[in-house]
Length: 156
Ligand code: HEM
Image (cartoon, rainbow, N blue to C red; front, side):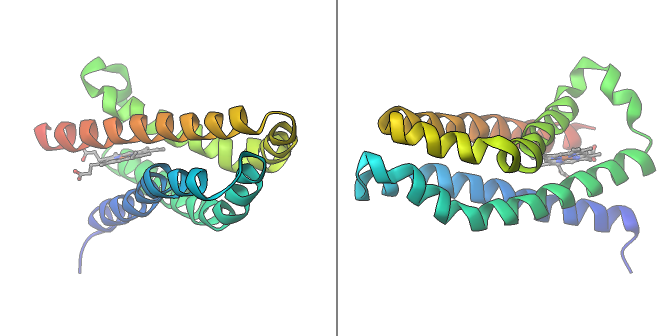
């Protein structure tokens, strides 16, 4: 029977794969397809409707990654790492997690969804470009974090 640390690590990576894999799909496949298939005026509403399902998956995987990550920090007593710059990838993990959590649990339900739709009526092309840019930024910082965490945790 694997110990709880092994299970936490497995769930952590499981969550990261589903979550950031989904962000990669949205960024590199879904958004370019919407741009090709839809008029600027329809793009944001169509994308938001399709993306809704992914937002729920992302909420679930974000929770899983956060809980499993915190469990590892607690059990391995890794809090000191947050004081050491060589462990920048630990800060990056928490940062990426916090950015997504804020967007998925606070900004989107409270105002972001409505703001995007309202802005899309006035400035459809710019709003869609803003969403595309936002996804590229989120994907880039996530991938840098994953590479840093893989190299860093292996190096000890
Ligand atoms: C609250 C947020 C998070 C916490 C507390 C956390 C914590 C941890 C801890 C303690 C480890 C084990 C490090 C070690 O074995 O030396 C780890 C590994 C890892 N984490 Fe996170 N993490 C968080 C979020 C994330 C996010 C958002 C990502 C992806 C963008 C991520 C990707 C990874 C990867 C790829 C590993 C390497 C696993 C391995 O090689 O075994 N983590 N995390």
